[in-house]
Structures are given as structure tokens and as C-alpha cells.
Amino acid sequence: MADLSINVNGMQFANPFVIGSGPPGTNYRTIAKSFACGWGGVVAKTVALDDTPVCNVAPRYGKWRMKAWEQRKGNANVIGFQNIELISDRGLSDWIPDFKRAKDEYPDGMLIASLMESYHKDRWQELVQRCDEAGVDGFELNFSCPHGHPETNMGAAMGQNPSMVEEVTRWCVEATGKPVWAKMTPNITNIAEPARAAIAGGAHGVSAINTILAVIGVNLDTLRPMPTVEGHSTPGGYSYYAVKPIALRMVAEMLLDNRDLTVSGIGGVGDADDAIEFLLLGAKTVQVCTGVMLQGHAMVQKLIDGTAEFMDRHGFNTVDEFVGKSLPYFTTHHDLVERQIKAKAEKAGQKKRDLEWSENISQETDKLTTN
Image (cartoon, rainbow, N blue to C red; front, side, top):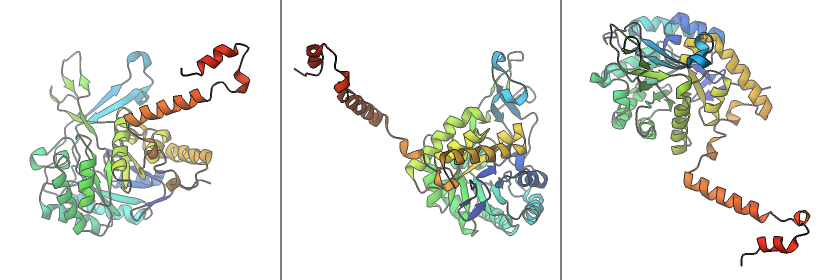
């Protein structure tokens, strides 16, 4: 029988499926719902200190749907999702009781605090220490929110600067003895660079990817970009099925750069097959946020059932047995050409075995002659 449990950086997950930071883990009620449904872990919505200004707008979401002739009912036709939502509008003081209650009532669920702050050591360390005291199991440093507070070097503005990633990671690691993951931005040329910086700063692992900065579309009746707030919009974070190929590529790039890297894979997971692909490319856990927003917390059961069936079919007893199983099959385009040439040559050498000769022996002899 398949064992879906996995230990990652000392955190024991009942299964590798984790709620990604966002609305599905935005307060005690949603965190409790997640654990009750069977999620192995929850990364709570990103929190900052009480005096960090957070003011969300509405509407703040946009959906990219299939074209009319191929649409299915409701959210089943959504292939892309954009948000311009900021981090939690609840300050740290409001979050501390939620963290404590969640750990008291679900001690076996891995609860990870997601943190984001301005470029000040004392603020980051206070945030870490107070969450640590509340009993969380680990931390995820949000270096990757693509919108909001760039003027204070928060989110992706910080994550696009590897030296800043290394320094802030070091501040946080100094403030706790618990695992620290750094959440990577995809809005960068080479994602391996900030990943290296995070590890140099002492991070135990990385999460990737956060959302991709995008414009979901333009309303052809009003001529306004979407999502539209008082007639205007701003680029926001793009997620769900459409980003999965990019997320898989970036996870693979980081792990090909550092095979020992711990990665929590994120991006476009809607069912077990999607999650398994991240695990096969080396991720040890898989986070889901948009999928839960559109399908509900109970979607975890199909992740569990589908992964167990996959493991039984392939004879894997534990998740660790197939994590990274597909990674060795990446190579360069030049090597692909060489492999194909070699394969064709070997195939040609197999021609004209004894049973393949016909009556036209002289012609077939000529075909096998080089001069």
C-alpha cells in the first residue's frame, strides 16, 4: 500500500500536498478546513507587522476562460487566473491567536507562516520570532509577490535582487531554529540565481513559482483592461493551468543547478497528474492555491487518491522513491541531436538481417555497400 507521508527539512507531512499562501489559508477557519479535509500542510496567507499598510480593492480577480466553442460549465472552463490581491489585511497581532489555535487543534498538520516585510532587519526578525513563539512549524519568505509595495522593496522587488535575498534570508534564519523556505519569483531571467542566494543565506529550501506578472485581458465592450476597478487596472499575478509548463521548467532548472535543493513546487495544479509531475521533477511537496479557490478544499482527496493509484501502478512504496525520477532525462538540444544521429545509425545497422533478404540479392548487397 502506498505511503504518501514525507519528511521535508524535519517537517513530517502526512502527504506532500500543501495549501499555497492565499485565500485558502487566510484565517483560522480556512486553515482548519484545510487540515480537516486532509491537506498535509498549510502555508498561511502572507502576513506582515501590524503597521504595514495593506488595502485591497474589489474586484481583484480575473479569469481566462476557454473560447466559447469549447467552454465547459462554470470554473471547469477556467485555464488562467489573475489576481491583484495584496498580502493579508490582518496584521500579525490578529494572526497569532489563529496560529496557536490551529496548532492546538491540528498538531499533526504542518503550519507554515508566510512572511513579507520591508528591507529592515529588525522588522523581519520580529516577524519571525513572534510567529515562532506562536508555534508554527516553519516559514516561507515571500520574495515574490508581483504587485504591491515595490517602493519599499517588498515581494518580487526584493526577490529580483539575489544579494538582498541572501541577506534577508540570513536575518530570518538567525531568528529561528525552524525550517525556512524562500519563495521564488518567476519574473526574472534565471530563477536559479535567487535560489542559490537563498541557500547561501541559510534557507533550508525554496518554493516556486509564485504568480507571473500578467494582464488577463481587455473588455471589448468597455475597452478597459481587466480586472477593472473604477475603470482602471494594473498588471497582476497569473496562475492556474496555463502557468504549469513554465513552473515545471523553472523547478527543473533550479534542481538541475543544485540536485540537493529542497523545492516545494507551485503552479497550475488542478489534479493528481499535475502534482505528480512536480514530484517527478524533484519537488518534495506541491502547493495548491488557485485550484482550491476554484474547486474547494476537498480537492485534496483526488490528489491523494490519484497519487496513490500512480504509486501502486508503478510499484513505488513511498513518495521519496519517485521524487526527481524524471529529472535525469533532461539534456541539451545538441545532445538530443547527437542521440538521434546515433539511434538512426544503430537502426540502419540492424537492417538486412538474414530473414529480410529477398531474391534481388545483388541490389540489396549494393545498398549495404559504401563504395
